[in-house]
Length: 269
Image (cartoon, rainbow, N blue to C red):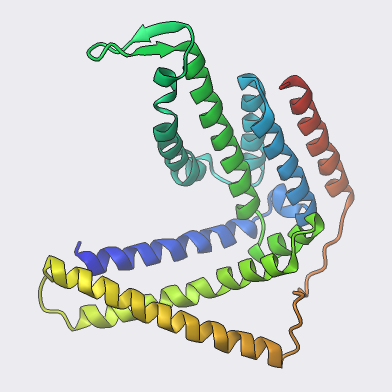
């Protein structure tokens, strides 16, 4: 595919990802039935427990808990592998790759050609980094997939997140799709006028011009949206029609989250 087709495919992929997340959030799973405030607090405890654990089996236990939550919430492990585990493993693996060779310790092997020593302490450090990042990423994605974005933002107020941060995140999520749609229309109109393949310099010029036009539209849209919000009574706080209600299941799951996190803290010291 040429430059325009690849760009359009990227826009469509981003929109499909968001639509898939909305469909999963509407499913009848365990996490979907919980109060968003309970999910935010409980998953935050598990993420902190995994990030501070000093034993691999404790991190593995938290990761296993995340898998159980995923299956019980109708989130496919294949979806997690494709969108979380493989990208995170590749990115974190590149960062952790030098650790076995630069961290001093007991030498367990050497590279066949270069002869660089590989230490046990370096392998252990790399294992900690990769396992912590994958576990924390899995728990974070589970929270996003099982909860509508507006509910996540409203639940963040329980953690005393500033209102301005919540508003910025909510507006960015809401209007990024409008900007993606505008960029797609621009590229579609350009492609409809093309008869052949664009040369390299022309593709780069088109990309730079598209970014400039999109930035101009973004600035104009932000001003118009803010003026419209002020005219409708916006004074900084965001209100939703949905009110959170805590049930017996929510309290049970909160206690379970806290017990698991405390157990991970104690065993992972």
